[in-house]
Structures are given as structure tokens and as C-alpha cells.
Image (cartoon, rainbow, N blue to C red; front, side, top):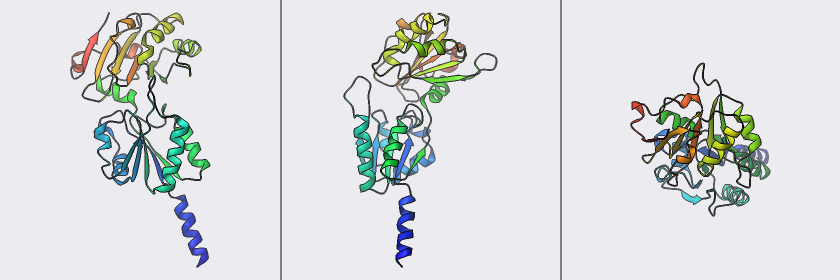
Length: 263
């Protein structure tokens, strides 16, 4: 009897208590079915700041905790988020950590997995649609293009202090593939000038998408040379899309987005 109880306890400990879930770019219809099901079953949802209210509404039964990190604003430290995650997992049986986009792309996933492993808490990662794919679909354009762009790079060009990483830009400037810069709203002009300085052509197409997939989505089209003409964002997540694959953006089939262009 004792052995059976011990086996049941071990089995229970092996079951996930935490699901690290991708919320996608914001449109609730872009959630995976699994993500929607887990939200409907969650006891507590620890969510990023930019997760849309429409997605959080899919978990009306859950306690919701905003643990979002926002560049340049007061926000939760990663160490605090890790602590809340572990504490919640010890208190509840179904914890959803809801991350914008896909958890594996610039989502600080590794830190949270390490914290859960150290605490002996089982977890599962649930992928989501990353912002680059949502933006490409909304424009619409292909991130890869035969004979033009055979590779795609997802990057954040900033170091911890906020400045553009010149060494990273030099490496990226040598690549003729599509370049997607996440969280680049505050670095548009600096990133463009850095790429030009490292050898990218000033005429290289640049498309800036804010709030991809959401009703307030906006699209600006220009080039590295005209990057300074971008009027700035409205507070939503900003994505820079750079490369020859984006030369055709602005055609009639982009009418669903608010499109501004610069020479």
C-alpha cells in the first residue's frame, strides 16, 4: 500500500503544473487550440504586459497576474517573475505562463525553465505564432523569396545598456537574407544607420509594422536611407523588416493595413 501511494505521488510530480504558452501576436484567432484549452482550464495566468485583453478573456475563471516587462518602463524583474512562477506552481495545479508571440523567441524562456527545474516543478512549452510571421501574413509578403532571400534572421540589436550592437550589425550587414528586428521601435534610425555603415545598401527596403495582427496595426514602408522619416509608434510592439524580399510591400493587396510610405 505504501509503495502504491509512493508511485502515485511520483506520477503526480511528473505531471506538468506549469504551461509556458505562446499567446501569439495579439489576435485571439491566431492562438493554437491547445493554448485556448489551457487558458480555459487555468487556475492562474501569469501574463506579459502586451497580451491582449481579448486573449485574457479566454480565462475568466483564472486569477490573472501581470508580470510583463516593457522596455523603458517600470516592469517586473526577471528574478521576481521566476519567484512568482515557482510560488504559483506550488500553490496551484494548473498555472499558465502566457508569453507574447512564441515563448522560444526573445521570451526569456530559458530563465523560467531553469527556475522551474531547480524547484523540481514539471512544465510544458506550448508554441505560438511569432510576430514576424504574423506581420508577414498581414502585409502580406513572404519572408523568404527564391533567388532573393534564402535566409531569415530574427534579432534584437540592443545590448543590455540599450545601445545598438555594432558587431552584431556588421555580421547581419553581410547577409543578404531577410532581417527581422524585434523590439526595435526605439532603435529604428540607429539600426538603419548602423547597417548602412557596415555595408548594407542605403536603398535596402525597410518595412516597419506596429501591432501586427491587431485592428490598430500600422505599416510604414521606406528604406534604410529614409528610416529617420518614420513618424514613431503609438505604443504597440514594433517590428523592423529589412531586405529585398520586402520591396513589393505597399501593393494594392496591403490595403487592409494603414500604410505610409517614404522614398
